[in-house]
Image (tube, rainbow, N blue to C red; front, side, top):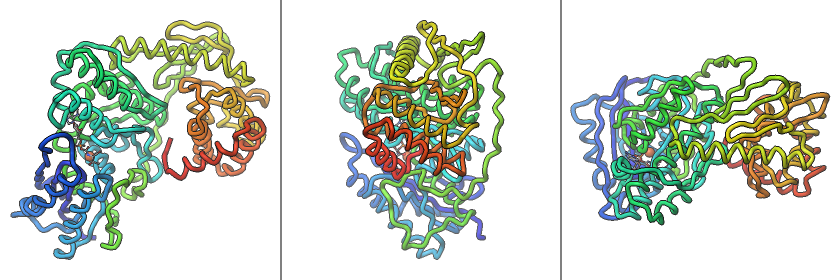
Length: 520
Ligand SMILES: C[C@@H](O)[C@H](NC(=O)OP(=O)(O)OC[C@H]1O[C@@H](n2cnc3c(N)ncnc32)[C@H](O)[C@@H]1O)C(=O)O
Ligand SMILES: [Fe+2]
């Protein structure tokens, strides 16, 4: 295999940038497109890229060793921009007679973050203009544990900023103005490990409060949402390193929140230097080089751009499986992302812990609302015939409930129990409740009966999508933990169909969700 420098070309959106990367960065040159007014216009951006791409590449290559491969951003991004970059990369590879490497832009953000931090197996918060995702490596892919359900956080901030007459990009402006603000409540939208920003943008646009206060509160709200879903991914995967990547990663308040959150849970945190955070050619060149070393070059026929290329579509062949870290749990305490559970005298006390990273008012509001909602849904599920713990007491942050002993379903996977689990979920869904976290750890087995625990992510909903996701989470867990998953799924479906009249529609939706390739 030939080693040597790889040329990387980036141009998915605002920045036409190229770099040469060998063992380390040799040279990076950027020529950003600046909209005359408003946000990014895809055609204008593409015209800009076309006008400067040759000179940017020439400047990178000047007086440097010849590249042994050409890497380019194949997607995701703006179609017209991607086409310019793709064409330039193909032409250059042909004329130099070197291989082409199609790099997924999101994976490149992740890989340069790993390079810069030296972390082996981090959770990644990728916060940029178009994307907001929490990713982590699992069995050959970067799985997307959670992501925005509408727009990226950077675009959300930029949109809000534009509505207030601030110049593009709004991110740095909002950060500056926020310094003098005080907190006002704005919509906070987190659904499991996903989040959404459009409600926040609308409310912030229409808010009559001072610009300082709205900017401050926008950041407090949006970044607390990001930090919360990131913590959930750390907690669920047991990983103990976090990196922040993407243009919004420049924001000092977001960095601070994540640093506090990691500090509280004993995880390591790192942010790459600014030149590696926003879109840049170095991340494409670096990732290209790593991919080249593992043989991921492509013939010209397969080098078509892909504007909706997702990180989890990439087969990550260049990583080795990380060591499984053993988590040391204390006997009488269980620690989740948002609560600790203490067991004593047949009771379990679930205590929602205060988060240092959140504004104190937002912190109090979330803890009280969620404690109340969880207790209410446990009671309602019970009324609908689902076995759930009996609630003994509740305060603003604590639910004291019956301690369900016995084994987790995870340790006793068999068709009879799965069928019973199916009935249980059928009853739950019939009562218009979705659990939100149907893993095999949240079903307890005692005397061949099943209890459902941990309603921390439960909501009231009769939507097909929510019910489909609920079932999908369980199926994914079964698939990844049992060789008999087909039989177990069948058994679950039998029980579920018995109770749930719309079972077929929901199972069809589950299948659709699976095909979307989302990891939940
Ligand atoms: C697909 C690709 O083209 C796209 N790239 C992208 O969005 O550019 P990036 O450079 O990663 O991020 C730009 C965003 O980063 C925001 N930004 C920059 N500095 C900021 C700051 N100090 N605070 C908040 N946002 C900031 C900008 O406002 C803008 O929305 C992506 O990665 O999603
Ligand atoms: Fe980006």
